[in-house]
Length: 248
Image (cartoon, rainbow, N blue to C red; front, side, top):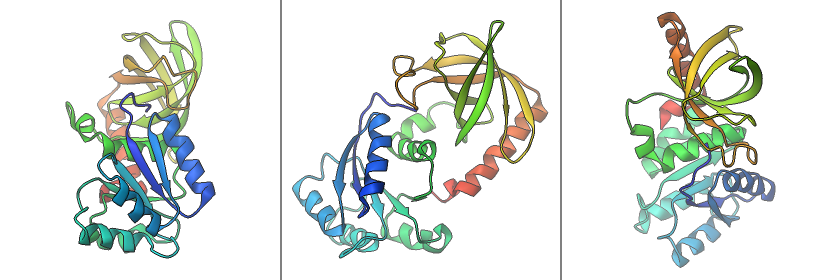
């Protein structure tokens, strides 16, 4: 969840509270942040320096020039496609405005009610498409699930921060070594079903695991039935639709 490849992100939102919230989440995940409080400041920022920008997070509801106006300005001034634009809204229904946003060149749409895990998931999915596409493609969704896991004979606790039908990301203060085998027990929300799976630690960010919410370990499942994998896949597919990830 945390990246060593820091990117520059411009947050455009008139709410000081929301700008601060987003900034705290993104900086903790390893990124650099710039701010604009309205569309006019966005335009001024781009005129000063647009080459160093990797992503714009753009609120639709802003005074003076709103998010739609910024997108139109980008199109009219040669900025379309220069960097991705992740639109943020607390007012508009995603289905109602998604087609209009696509026509204006937006990369995706996220609601202001998104959790920190969902925000980082969406941001890193846009910023690191090569990592998403590396190897066998797997649909992955952000979650925040408590988990009990066994390392040897000792039971530990942690949280799962994303999930696919083949693996998960485990945040825990317990130090794990790459190659370790773990036994995971967790319940998927809305299903009431307890999953009891084994996995292997494939990679880690253990140098920051004790300092940030987004540190931890990538786990690949190694022991589960076809029925359990189908159940996981069904859950992931339904979450993709519920979170609007299939509209990107």
